[in-house]
Image 1 (spheres, rainbow, N blue to C red):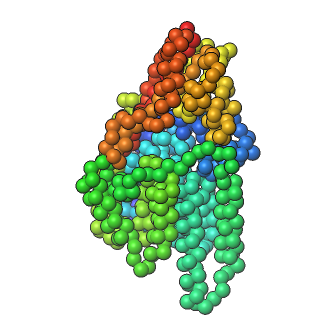
Image 2: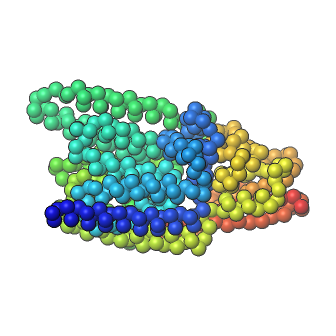
Image 3: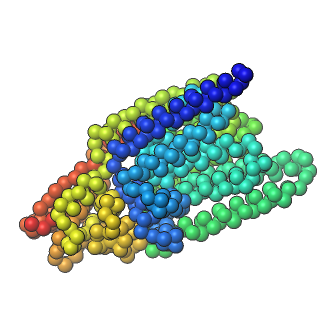
Length: 482
């Protein structure tokens, strides 16, 4: 009888918790303005069929699961300003499986969904990384009994590898750790691998290869890799810090090292290294942006849950709880900033362009940021865009580059120009509002337009926030003929 009462109480508590989370996430989501990266994926899904999405992905450098999901939701009637419905639903799925996992202490079940990466970066900001938390929580739930559920486990790993390069590497870590674990076990028992396990490893290997083939960048792709400058600031910033101060970062790195060291013991060293090494190396040395470091947080959390360390190791529990509390502060700071400042100016610019009645006018967009305006129109409004989204094809990109427009001998004669201007705050170096190198020709082009005396200028500002600091300020300048 008591057991049934306890189950009922748990069910009621979890239901109330999820309802409260949904209310908060929807309230914040309604006030969030999607920025260029969010717009890019939405437009790729909206303006392509399945074959078109797969072809475009070769210029995006990421698998297509998110775009396919967006396409499905668009067919069902989801609107661009309702993206928070999809992202909140996905995070709630993650929360359900988090609460079902007996290896997670109740304090973490309550607090983790409100941490900065899970709530703000992966629920409010609608990008492919939104899928990481729910899929990882499902994998962690099924993991102890994965041999009895090979098909489900294989499907989840397939979904994980199709989220992003980070998901691909993490899925590879799960695959490798499982393979090594089984080979070691079979050697001790002097047995051959069962047919179903052989089929599992071979099938996943084929799927990995297929993903690489369809995502592999086209020969004329112009997109670039971005390497983080300071690895120590990145490692410190995963869990504890948001500062350029060297002493604070040294403390953060030491704490990070303690957390990582406590995740490793002789029983799980292969698992810990398999799941963490590839992504840390990729983000630090190959391609990393600030919001990618949240993936390392999710990996550390996942390893701690799989190793049952949150319950067995009091020091690790205390350090990860400290990180959780710090992140809740980052999350609150980011939410307040998102309420007080436009995260994107796409909708405001679209309203202004509609006032200008641009239907029969020539409109040019300069650079990537103006793509955030296009989701508010049924069709592509930019004459120099082949489609509504930004193309990373080398030849097509030239039509949107400020350098091409500025150096062109052709007289600037469009009715409207939408031009981006960027400033950024690099908390890893303590620099405030530095102009990016890409704005040099934007400045030149704007001065050329202003000197012509033909155009009226209007500026729309927006600010991206990272943790508790301003990360990038973007101005969209609209120049319209007098």
